[in-house]
Structures are given as C-alpha cells and as structure tokens.
Length: 357
Ligand code: NAD
Ligand code: ZN
Image 1 (cartoon, rainbow, N blue to C red):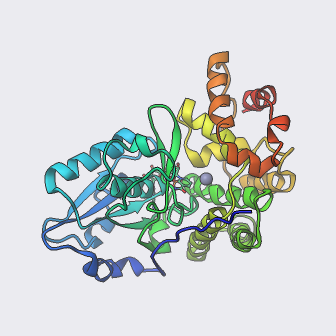
Image 2: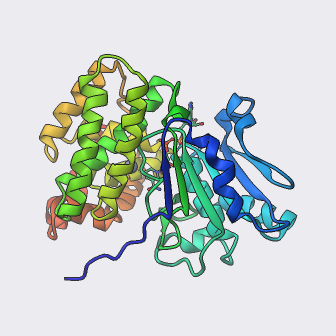
C-alpha cells in the first residue's frame, strides 16, 4: 500500500472582511519592480470590489472572461501577454469563482514552465514551481481554493494540471464576497460541494482523513440547503467552509459517477461544471440512493430548475465522444465502483445513462 503524500496550500485567512487584509498579506511577497497581477472574474468589472483591490505601482488588473470554463489557449494567451509586458511578475491573485481561481493557478505555473499549458494536462507533468499565487473565492463549492489541480479544456482533453506546484500559496476566505450571487449559480456551485461529499463518502478510496472532512462539509451543506428557510450571512459563512472541507475530503479520496459523467457533457456540449453535475446527479439513484433523494429535496426546497433533455438528438458519434471522455476518468470510476468497475459500467450502460439526461 502506497499512501499519498499531498501538498497543502500555504496560508489561509478566513473571516468576513478579511479581503481588506490583502495589502499586508501581499507586501512581503512583492519583488522590487515586478507587478502583482489581479485576475478578477469579469462579473466584478465596475463593481465596488474593484476599488478595494490593493493595486499599486505597475500592478495590473486583468478581467477574466469566464463565459466559457477555462481553456488551455486562454491560459497561454494571458501568460504570454504578461511575459511580453513584464518578463516576469511578483505573483498573481485570482478573485472569482472556480473558473477564475483555476485560471490564476494555471497562469502562475505557465509563467515558469515552457510550452503550452496543454502539455501539462495530467498528473505530475509540471516541471517548475509557478510564481506566487493567491486564491480568493467569490462563489463557494468547487473546492478549487484547496485542490492540487486546475481544470482546463485543451485541444484533446478536459483535464487539470495536477501537481504539487498547483496549490495556492495563500487563500483568502471572505464569505462576504459571495453575498448576492444569483440563487441558481449559488445552488449549482454549492451542489458541486454536496456532490463531492456524497461521492467521496461513498467511494472505495475513503479513509478517516477524507471522511472527517467529508462529513463536516456534508453537514454544512445540509444546514444551508435543507434546514434553513432563507438565505442569510450565516449561509454564506457555512457554505464557504463546506467548500473548503469538501475540497480537503477529495484531496485524499476522489470524486465519482456524477463527475465522471458530467465531464463528458462538458467536453462535448460545454455544459458548466456545477449545472452538469446536477443534471447527472438527478439520475444516479442506482449509485447514490440516499444522496439523490436528498438532492431532489434540496432542488425543490430552493426552487431550482434542473435542465432535462440535453442529450436529445445527439448522434452515435457524439455519444461515443462523451463515453470515451467519461470512461477515461479511471480513478473516478474505480473510486465509485471498485477495482472491477469496467464490468459494471459498460459502454452500453453509460450510453443509456447519457440518453436519459
Ligand atoms: P464559475 O467560476 O465558472 O462562475 C460562474 C459564473 O458566476 C460566472 O458567470 C461568474 O462571472 C459568476 N460569478 C462569480 N462570482 C460571482 C458573485 N460573487 N456574484 C455573481 N456572480 C458571480 O463557477 P464555479 O461553479 O465557481 O466554478 C466552476 C469551475 O470550477 C469550472 O471551470 C470547474 O472546472 C472548476 N472546478 C475546479 C475544481 C478544482 O479542484 N480545481 C473543482 C471543481 C470545479
Ligand atoms: Zn466538482
């Protein structure tokens, strides 16, 4: 048995208003003459948050276009722009949802690694540490703030740059930044966390480390989406910690069926991560009966509509593409169904599942 020796994030600050300590946090990490780059979710352009960003000297604010989830080409173009303009930089601060945080991680790595980010999609392919990087979530649920990956769609695959160099050096968890996120978006991203917990807690990779974090994250999600009758600051506080704990849980285990199937949708149809997971989860009673029952209860209670019929009219070739992408996520299937997963999840069975979505 070989145990995973995993790299954690460097520093964590948590609390409402902790964003305002960013200046003092960054100060010792500034290198003379080299700018700090703030990569900010385009949602915040012209919003009050921009005035609170401690940009000075030749620092630069770049708005991240997250209309589509991050692509390797986009990462490469931001890194090239920064190299052309500055040579190198003091660091990069990603402020936004999972997409912006993943972009910031990837750009940090590409400042110090040759070639294209597509060359590093996989496990432990990144050669050199990136520049100093900070993650500041404005949506809670993905766990991207703690994970050792940054998910990218490249020319041939949708896969992260998984490496010990990928985790942030610093994260700033300020739940006030998630206030006022649209109800649907908050639900979809929140459900990413809920689904991480179900998949981790029912997976074959589970150990006590993962379980401890997974159970806490699940409990917090249930308080927010099942027990409470309306959204308040306490919901944001709890969901931010749920995301963190959910991310810690999968750091030592893996996700499962919902994610494996949802990756196929994302690759072929561009379905977003949170909503894609929800679309799939809705049909997984065979694998996660209790989780799916509770999931449906949360959908109803929070007045959310989950899209249906998204695979209607697809042809054989398109179904095959999704099936190939999905079955390629071997560790996810093994975690969900055990070592003999290929006997349970045949191409035919997966096709029937996709047809239902
Ligand atoms: P997102 O980052 O894609 O953002 C979704 C939308 O919400 C965008 O339109 C964005 O502009 C907007 N938004 C962000 N913050 C907001 C706020 N406070 N108020 C209003 N709107 C806001 O959504 P997400 O669900 O956080 O992230 C999904 C991404 O995370 C995917 O790209 C997925 O691959 C990635 N992901 C990464 C990991 C990891 O471990 N690295 C894990 C899970 C998911
Ligand atoms: Zn996820």
